[in-house]
Image (cartoon, rainbow, N blue to C red; front, side, top):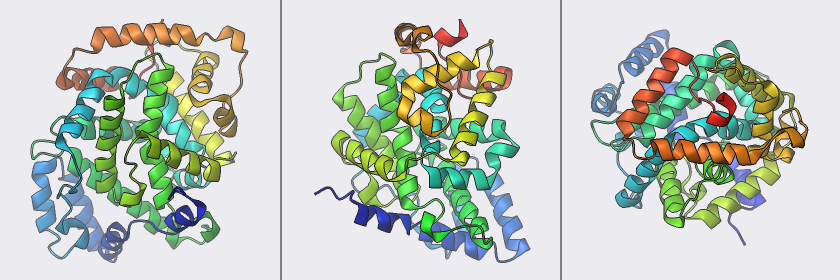
Length: 357
């Protein structure tokens, strides 16, 4: 029997991230402590600043061993996972907006948290840009070294999650039948959306991915998930485990919700309004439905289109051409191009060439 059964995952829904929650609880007790924490986080630009941040909180259980790599981490696989990202950087960033984020919105109770936090509603550009920048930081070849930004970026995200839980719990609007806000099951589903679901999307766009590449990419996201506070039992050991976990979460959590529909349509509006060249809502919705499947797209309110007007083979062809043009470029080159896109186009994801032409 799979460990990803209802009994296990029900327990995960009632568990969040105690070390991070305790840290936020302690530092939100007074306005002085909260202000100090905000300043310290603003000064946490990269891993080199982590020790200074850690020294500011000498008694923190969260920070004590935070930067210690898990014993099972395989540096060779991590390097291969990073190299895989560099090789497919542009289509992966395309898929972040077209597939990974809307996939998360299909989990109704998880989408409820995102909607309640209102970070997407009030400033979508900042919210999506933060997510895109986070992916770049954790995918860097030196992400977990003193010269990288992976650990500092992960810590910030982990504390943002704990802050959201803190504020939601201050209200009387949360029903415990939904599980804890940003619980372990929802966190696991999000981690899969950036690893397994991205790999599926690349294959649907026509890319050939080896088992070794898949294994390395999932392993790298396991390391990231570990630092984000995920229960190690929710870190899949291989592709079979990843598929089993994804299937269990999808069967349990995916259902239609107004929150998921609103979030997905806000995302589509954002991508259309910030595209570097005009793209129709019909074409964008068609591509998202192709990547997500009609079943999932229906759950998040992405409009159906006439299948005869959408040709996925064109996406595959142009994506393959896109890959041939960029696969030999370095991480630094790819990141620089991403930063330029943020500055010029204000769209952190970009769109595939087939939709831009």
